[in-house]
Figure (cartoon, rainbow, N blue to C red):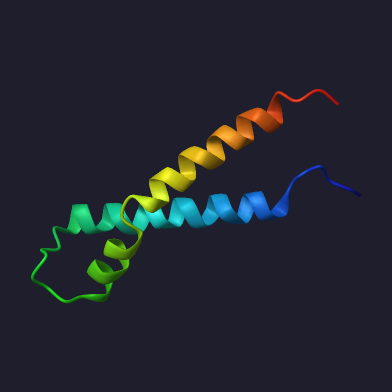
Amino acid sequence: MSSDRIEGFDVARAFAVLGMVVVNFKVVLGVSDGEPSLLHTAASLIDGKAAATFVVLAGVGVSLMTRTP
């Protein structure tokens, strides 16, 4: 059975959601800037990028939904 889904788009969306989860865990757990933890380092690398990626992917998804066949 063939599907019209774009697998790369789904993978990128999954990475964006996981990135937002990591960033929000940093906020919820109250990791301070002075603590050299793996979570803090990972969250610092993707802070802001995950949310921006998710918003862009949401816009692309809406544009793909509204296209005419």
